[in-house]
Length: 207
Image 1 (cartoon, rainbow, N blue to C red):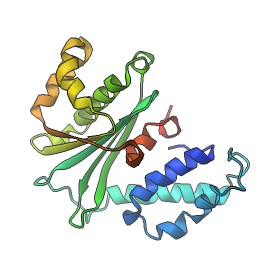
Image 2 (cartoon, rainbow, N blue to C red):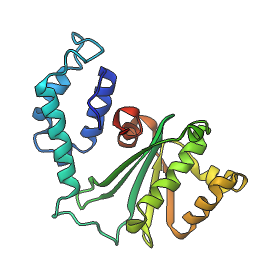
Image 3 (cartoon, one colour):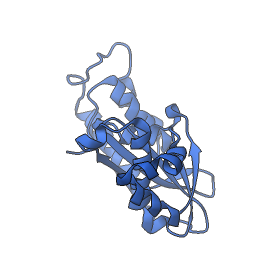
Image 4 (cartoon, one colour):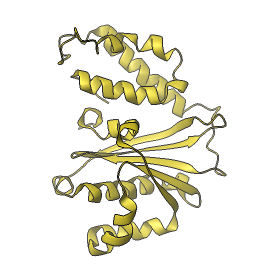
């Protein structure tokens, strides 16, 4: 995940980390240097404003979130549903694997993002979203096989997967592979899909 270059990118990243603030100790205090950069007096382009303290804060946020996924006190419960939240931008796709803990918090288990090929970038939005579902389920199959899976998306790939994929040979085989999983699709309003949305943007995708 690269450092933000604009205030919009910074707000997007803060939204991402805020979603997991329950697992980031002293979140408000820790993120203050970054939140200060969203003030009106700060220029839109952050190139000259991004100082060492901001980079250190950004790296700390990433490190703490990685520790949250590796926390030995939290063990995935295979008797409970798993959540897979997906999003596809024009350039990349992303998925979050998570599970609600005993307090009802959405606990991160794994993050993933991948650039789209030029051919995939030419696909329609719903086709990219459908492909993202297939990609994420396949990627996390070792957790999801034989378990209940709730797929969250800000699009509605279910209709496409069940009606349109048979007409698209490149996706048909992958769609058929989903039949071995117990998937339920749920719509997630775009503005609340902050995690997958952030991971699917160029700022978070490695070369």
